[in-house]
Image 1: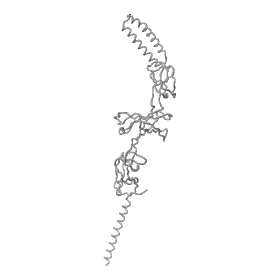
Image 2: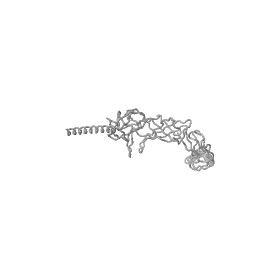
Image 3: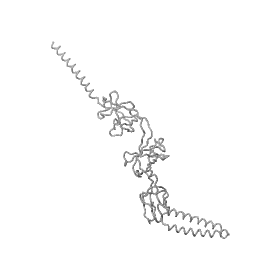
Image 4: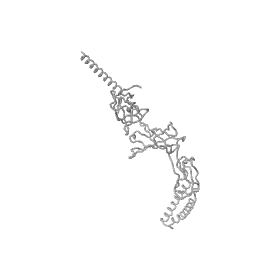
Length: 338
């Protein structure tokens, strides 16, 4: 009887032990599931906007220089900051050399006029009168060239940005003045070759400059380089910017934003994409059937808290957005609401 009682007690203890062990395992399983928040990958239509950094340039600029060196500058009529109109005389050179050439021209012309009747009367040969005529024409060209040099006109309208001489100086190669047209400006952008079909002349471009934060200046594509740079796989695009109030100035740092159209893309919350330590790879945890699946991804554009996933996640899949330090491939997870 006593033996039977002991067997009953032992059996009860085994049952209780198994029951406690089962409870402990279930509790452990529950505790091991990581609570995560998530988002669902969805297809969205995104704008293909590309931004290129550049420097604002004058629409036109010109160095004012005479055609010959070694001439004295008689007068410079403008200084830095002055406005100049196209065709306006901006500098004059010493006219001593011009006067000497004009005297020589008058002498040669007088000689030609006197010898012409002599030639007609047969007093000199055709060759002699031709040589005299050629000398006269050459002297006329020299005088005309010197007259052009004696008064230097601006080929563009603009503002003087540099003056390198004073009145009376000897011209020695450096430009007398530098003139820039700034009522219109331009920027040059080197655009990736994949967008060559997307860029058109007349296409609007947004221009941003750091000195005017939050303000957008409207430009337009005015010229597209017909060839690509083989080294960088880019092509040059000129963007013209109206600047009638002249708030923008050459030399300012600018960002030119082109809208290359639209396309559909798989998007997830950007917080879901993590960077692999020690490498440039990105990864996410896809939640499926209560388990976290580690996936490498190829990410793209970031737009308003979302990031494009070009490879690694399909539309409709659920992706973890929290608890990354506790997650690993195959880890049990429990998705919780906000």
